[in-house]
Length: 110
Image 1 (cartoon, helix red, strand yellow):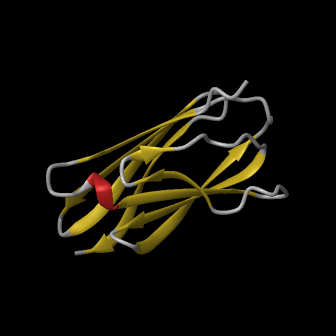
Image 2: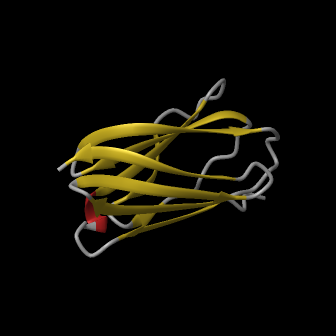
C-alpha cells in the first residue's frame, strides 16, 4: 500500500496555485509524473533508487531535488515550503521516513 504523502505551503508573498512539482524515478516508467499542480495533489508513485523532484513556479522550471530511496517499500512524507527571502525564491524541503533529509534550494532571483 502506498503511504507516501506530500504537503506544499508558501509564504504570503507567493501563490501556491503557481507551483507545480513533478517526480521521475530512474529505471522505471515513472517520468515527469505531476504530484502537485495548482494546489491539487496526486498519488506519489513508489520506486527505489534516484527519485528526481522537478520544481516549477509560475510556469518556469527552477531545479531538481534528488532523493535516493534505498527500498521500494519505504514510505515518506514530503514537505515543500516555498518562500521569498533576500529577493530570491527559495524552497525548504523536509523528507520524513527511512531515507529522510532536509535541504534548502534557492530557486531564482526575483
